[in-house]
Figure 1 (cartoon, rainbow, N blue to C red):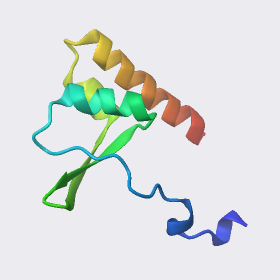
Figure 2 (figure 1 turned 90 degrees about the horizontal axis):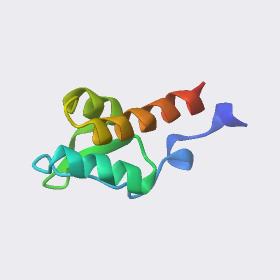
Figure 3 (figure 1 turned 120 degrees about the horizontal axis):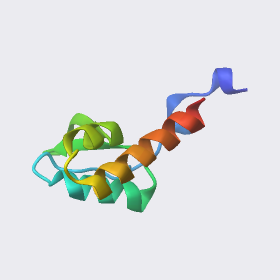
Figure 4 (figure 1 turned 90 degrees about the vertical axis):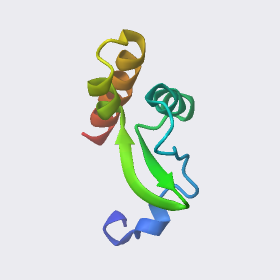
Length: 82
């Protein structure tokens, strides 16, 4: 059952990633394109962080379309986790 599942059995292999120097809007569009709410941030082949739809919504309050898309992704994530 689920209580005995391993991380490897449920993880996303080869997830989409972003570079730390990429524009936040590109990260938001990538999330929308691939239906994900978080992206690993990778530099020199190493994960150095994670960016979330909530992070983007907080960062781009002056960009209503992008911020709204990020918020919707984050809301869907919270709704499906409940």
